[in-house]
Image (cartoon, rainbow, N blue to C red):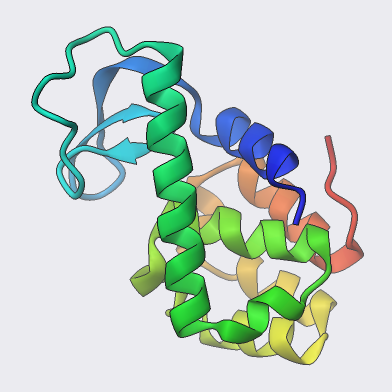
Length: 150
């Protein structure tokens, strides 16, 4: 997978913040960096705000590694997907967490079997699609076509 592209897509989709902000999707959580949930994974005690670009990158690297690990454990077939669809699955897992991603049973089954138009349709038929705006539109199109829109 092209990790550079995934990082750029996550920075675009999550935004980059050097100070904490409250993400109030459904359950408020304190977030910093590139969508890093400080409640689930606290920062080192010695870190202060604003975070440096290096600290933000360290968090992103760890969060991506954690995302890949969760995908490898729960959906080991994801590594056999082409580059674009791997990035779609990783982006969704980064955004939702593995537990919520696993709730996309029909979309994941369709993805695994190569029925990408069906997977995209199932992704669109979710609360997530209405909550994340352009991100969902891009990821659904990429799932269906194998080309990540800019």
